[in-house]
Length: 118
Image (tube, rainbow, N blue to C red; front, side, top):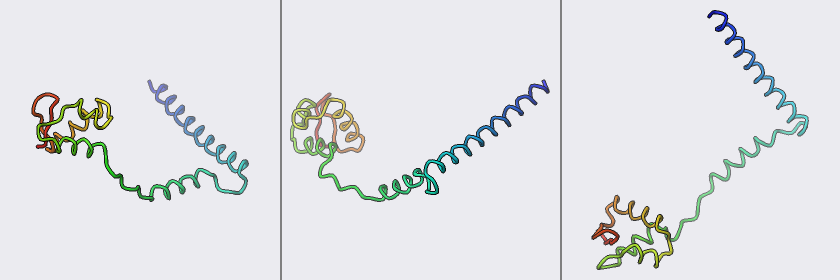
């Protein structure tokens, strides 16, 4: 039993040394390829930070907003086929939007598949 534990520790130590040697070799290869310049990975990381700071342009109308306004304009209510015809969205997208709008309390179900402003 003791020999197994010792063997396990020795294998872990060898594995750790192999990893450190591999990292050193990778650094040497990068320096040989790129010379004295810094590795390009660091430049890419800096470039990513700069692009993440940029702000997005505001969207004019979201899909959620389009469906909710369509439903809220109707006095009698709107069914899913009418929503699909007016927006062009697929059934899954409409179902997801309706689910979210119902949870937020913006719309309510009159019957199955027929929705009205809450």
